[in-house]
Length: 407
Length: 117
Image (cartoon, rainbow over all chains, first blue to last red; front, side, top):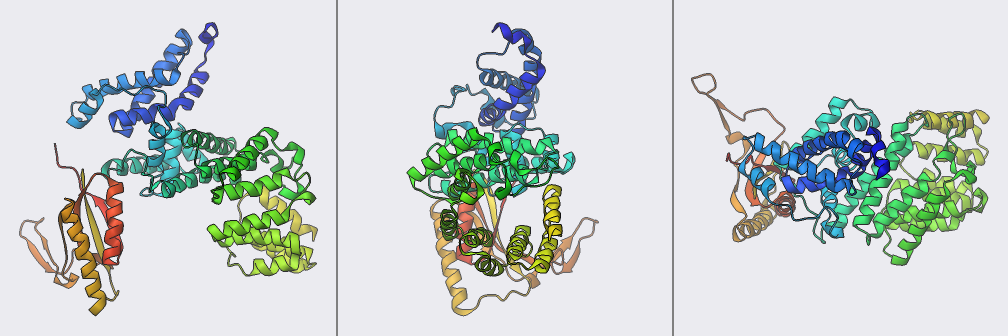
């Protein structure tokens, strides 16, 4: 504790963000009001910024923040006489729940996740609320990450919170019967956050890399809350195995490097070890789902020593399994890629050409690469151009232009 | 408990069901209504006559002005609705799914404002 006097404001803010979801979730249960919970948490931060550098960080900072915020919240309710009796009453109830989670399903953060990702909210609002309330990101940060103005993002979040209150969206974990469908909605939000960071990363914008880290962090929280749901483990594994290749995805000049050409030595060994362990755990549970299968595909890629060692038969089989439980032309395209590695580019192209995906740039890229292997340079060039017309990611554009111009 | 309106909308140009289709729908809705009444969920509900029967009254300028027809020219209008009382939106959405299956149409769910304390 002797070191704590040196706690900086930045350190206080890091701890605050780390604890934010837990603190706000607990306050929402107590006050039944998201705005009040957020205001109270913000006031607790101000107190912490003032006190912690002097007194040191308390042994249970989350508990300290929750208690401090709850007091501020109650003060606020007392001051504002216009608040209705229900709020008054809710606030005055002595809170018997200790700060530590009392059990997986009882954790307030789990309730909060299911509110934030409720199907009655617009998908972009689900993402924004999740990052705001669970991730503790500020409205300007979320606005910057999604390239919209702060006003737009602020309104999106306000509208969603208003709907939660007015429509009485319940603050609880769904019944066992509804859990699978609702959980898949939550996982979709986390994966969307991850992809928003991962796919848009051009190596220049730091905030977007933060989105992948945030998605992984939130997925870890979800896994700690629902440790027996294999799809949660599957999504975490998928994120880790994908993110492990992050630095290898871009060349020094900022050009996208496809999987087959990546320097495998630069992949993050720690993330791969953790991801592979999760995939093995999923296999043992044997309740496959879309994220687990995609994680398994990534595990196959990751365990191949070189690109040439890739077990394409295994990958084709996994995509066939994915296609069976979640049919989509995009999955069919991925399977066709594996088929082309097994049976040759002509067979692959025939499968690719059957798919109605001409607004999806990877379809054009796949065609371009197959046409190139089939020695049809004019057709390949046209396919690269079609792909380029559909993308705005500079790293990927640079790669495709180079590939096209090699022909 | 929150009160919700579950409304069913008629879209211009969409053929109304007739004969056996109509009868089947009525029967399904009857069963659903009875369930709402039995379980204490029902507040009010009913089907509306066609939009051609609407009359609009405007007394905002003093003397009421009475006009034949709906409030606004629209491509769709409310054909019927239920007002229910449910513990929360999740419960209301489950009832709306049953309502939609029974009346064979989309159902919009909207909360009522709470009564002033």
